[in-house]
Length: 283
Image 1: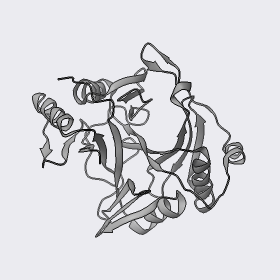
Image 2: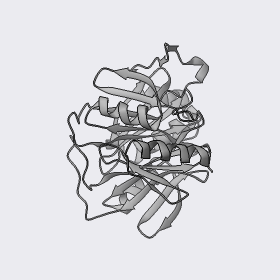
Image 3: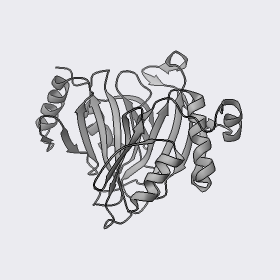
């Protein structure tokens, strides 16, 4: 059986461990424009059109890890239309203006960056059509070019109070200790394919020819060891298309001595930095 993930693989909701559940819910709902899909005890699930994107788990006894620790770099929320991205960006800028950290044209996408109230990075972005992406020798052409945020809003903001379309997690970017270990785990073992590499600084991987479902960098975290319980990243969800794919991944992990937990619905394991990965079958 192939050791490369099925091309229909995607990423799902990201779980964040948070200290102030009300403030964080307000940011992702009133700011970004996600809807509260449900609340169960100390967990709030937010998303769009019934699809979860962010799960907030209240863990007030935990503390923040230093910026040099492994963990979350950002959760990237993907919008299908530039007008919806503009509505979300305008909403965050209006309600939480100090949370904006930058904006870039990455050739494959347009992205605007924020920090939520507890310092978790958030990317809000829109993808150019795939036929406009450039590829060479299996690597996608990406760059970091200036994107004028005000110009983007002027060109694309139709109704500042309306966000009608979908908003899903398009990719997740992690802080790791080194890229050799990241490659061995996420590519050689889990089965993602490399789409871009930047020396010892950043690695981008995906399934099915997407520009990236996961990215790993060492910009702040070079040499970081395994995480200890802290506020921030709780879980990253990977969605596979079939039970057979989930079973094959579980067998592959076991054959490499990686501990897993499988209740028949969720396959869970940790990466080399103790980031929790949760694998489910889509739908």
